[in-house]
Image 1 (tube, helix red, strand yellow):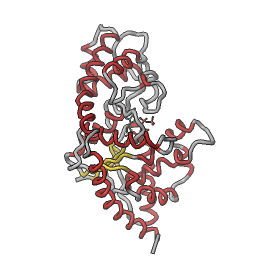
Image 2 (cartoon, protein in one colour):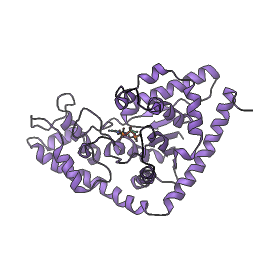
Image 3 (cartoon, rainbow, N blue to C red):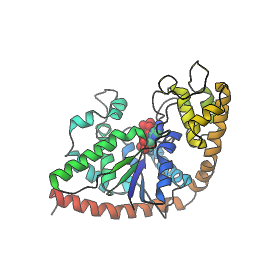
Image 4 (tube, rainbow, N blue to C red):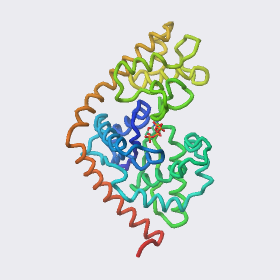
Length: 326
Ligand code: AQP
């Protein structure tokens, strides 16, 4: 049985990219693995947060975890800041990382936009993510394709410490979905769909109602060619919509191209609205039931205790290796 770890930031607007790139895989993996799923609230502090909204968003992500099908009997579901080992290990890893390797992270470059006043936490984000993963002796990390670089730096850090100090960490592997692994923005299909983009029609949030979904899909950027075929280079908008259609319907891209041969973009988009709404309605229904139940907080508390028990063992080992404490 393999140890699986992953997390989602409670920054609101969880979208279909987060679902297809991450949450859906979480559910698939829980039957045959020892899974730990975290709500990474400390990561969200890399950009300013409203404290009240952050609390609400933490519970929203927890309810979404359960609504998509995570089973707290099977998987450990918890909030990152409930386990002190994440911050402790992050500092030890920080001291074993290089500023050069962190400077190469594309997510940092994109989010900091070259500004000197970008928060330092944005720069060291990959180290906290490495700590999250290494703290639980993780074998497999299911994430979206956008996280490839961060998984690489986690592996580099684990190998570096193992080489310097002897076997300390399990070296994890990323698990990236092939089809539709990277869902792109609906208004700019050359950048990834994101929670923080200003335009609400650039994404489909998992909690959007049918009207909003319809508006966003119908408005989505395509091209003037008018034929429905997959071609990322020349037709990134239609290719992204085909990816979304395929991921939610289970149909092959080729099959979908055939089905819509000779049809206009309007017909295809209307059908896509139906496919998406049908797929996410049951998740929304479960979300609303769970979000208001008293069980939610006890599931997170229990998960925090179970996660802490594992983390404390790792931290004891790591502190011994580095000669920390007495
Ligand atoms: N567009 C995407 N396509 C596929 N997977 C995606 N993920 C994010 N965006 C896409 C995957 O979702 C998981 C959780 O993401 P996160 O909460 O850790 O943060 P993120 O990657 O920073 O997500 P966003 O949505 O892009 O938020 P902002 O706008 O705040 O940056 C990860 O596994 C990620 O790969």
